[in-house]
Image (cartoon, rainbow over all chains, first blue to last red; front, side, top):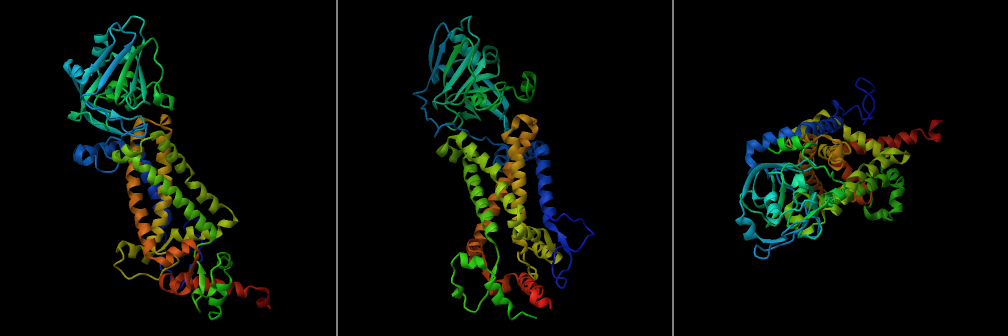
Length: 246
Length: 243
């Protein structure tokens, strides 16, 4: 844009005959957009909350920038696993390796959670309803050996992996989920069974859960290898993770 | 005045016509005006290509149905991110040097609005069209919006790409800004394309550079006057004329 300030020579070389009143509209619009954008980055989270609560999750999710899930898949397509064929393997440093069907999982004591789903890159979906089995119950059913220190997960997509320390895996709001948003977990959301790690960013909540492997020390998972932090507590610490997920 | 000589001179003064191999008799008796030089056309089309890549790769990143078909999120993210980071480069290069003089002049035209132009725009075209400069208010607004969008999308995109360096609330805000502005960009870009394909003369000038004088007389009369005045001004300063 032109560097000269107001009160200097007339703008450009516009013919004087037709000029009514020249305005530096371009610069105003440009700077206005930049200011709105910067304001949106700093305050947009609050604005979005207000819009979301005013419109409800249904309508709010339809608007651009609304409270909605962004579905990620790292392979070419979603793996489709039927309810009947689904099996969850529990292996590694356990006394009794398990192969659990969906019926087996649903027969275990269930836990319901209502928590925000928070992505590390910023998007969040408030107050998502979850239902599943505590991971600690699944681990207890298999009998974790004393040498164990971590848990690794892999996915039916054949590519995604995740891991937790044994301490993290035993937290009460870490579940093997089969219901989400008031219905069975859909294929897009990682159904029929996925992990939900409430106090951590979304990438820890591995989709299309295929196996749970108890190990001495867990390897970082797919997203951590692609630059996401291994320490995934929402807000940076365990305490803040539990608060903001509440 | 040398007005009668103007049209011929303008036509002859356009080596771009010869370079593109256009026959000068395609508009018999009608001069041509250079609307966009090579630098501006190159900047426009490279920018358009990057926008196309960004908009296409945005679809699976946002829409579940498209993500289900495409997948491969890391690859899509990489293409999207680096195209975004590259976005200002061709524009800045084409504006920078001696080659960018015309482009810089046009950017100044986007900036300066006559009060009747703002009135026309506020009336959404209901009021009588003012005597137009090289660009009408809608075209100016489109150009400014694209410039502003590049700045805002780049800024919010940087927060999303290098999220570790920003507080969580900013990341959420950046997602909000990036999504809302993306929706606006889709509307504006498709509007721009719709206007382009329904205005063949203007569209041709983005491929070949020139418009006819009769087109300019109808759509950009003040610009035509200006070009003619500039033509005769350069005549009057030529050595022969100084004596």
